[in-house]
Length: 415
Image (cartoon, rainbow, N blue to C red; front, side, top):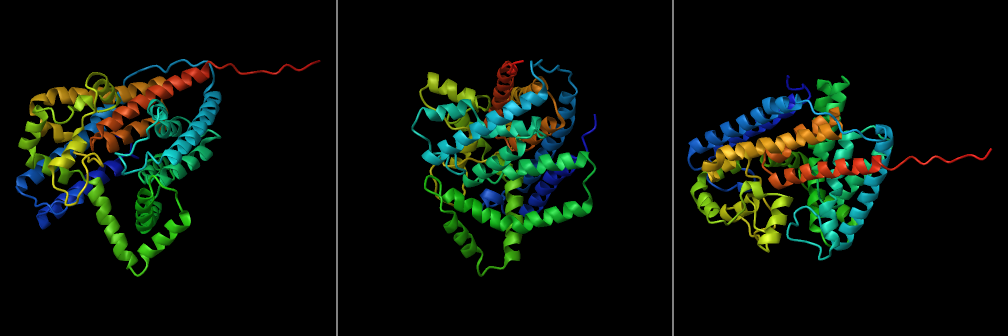
């Protein structure tokens, strides 16, 4: 099975960004992204990191993806048609989104960049059990043509933008790109125009995102935020802001600089891991939180949070305020003796994600979603997020089963 053509620009684009980042770091002898200001150190670490990142992208997103998609798994038999189920799920997801939005607005939680902010209420557990945001993404992948899709999409975008999440646009752009590509509607001219528009609007979106995050936990005054955006743009060369935006995008997408620092700190990381100062990779996610709370009475940090304590980022923060993506190959240096087990674990996570979409009812968009989650969750190594995605797939399957067992009510007419 060949890699679908619609994925290739994304695969090569992410690899290209890492190559460009490596060249910039070698030329400047300084790391980029969140680690800007740190010296590169041993140049060989840069080329080792780049090679491993590129191999990870190619192997996971091509042969592994192609192999698992070829496995024959039959869809679960549902008692209602896909049209009926799509409508029922669309209504259910919309109701969940409204309730989730109300919860977040009232308690000021689930805002980007506020990891240490939690709601002191049992209701918070409800939204762990029912992951409303991810359930919409799954609805997008399985029922894109449903009549309730557009209103769900609008509310999902609004809800996430208010909470300062800009990454949602990546999902929309990727889904619609694949959809248009399959219909033969992609041309070089359209790609260039859309890309130019995105780059041109990026400074506005970025400023808006940070202002929304800054208002977390307080009432949102959109008039004030718009005025702040205008103030931030006033008197500045907009093209310089666009250039800064491009540099910021490269710094955010590339994984090489972080892996370089992991290699630089590998002895220290190995010591802390052996001492139990942060979670092993197989404990990241909801299952790890449940096990630790049940048996230990506390939740330990994962590697993404722990790494912010060990590396130098040049600004003050409390550990736990945020986390960083250490990249898929990082654990080869943190615990090299567990490398085989690590590879098996990652393969099993990939398998379960494919298994579940096939059980739910495989669609072109659901295959797109799996490939994208591997790209933006597994390769940067948001293991907890990817485990949560697998959990959301299970919830979606259960939701579909429950709604399929609700009979269609037929009204009798009196003769």
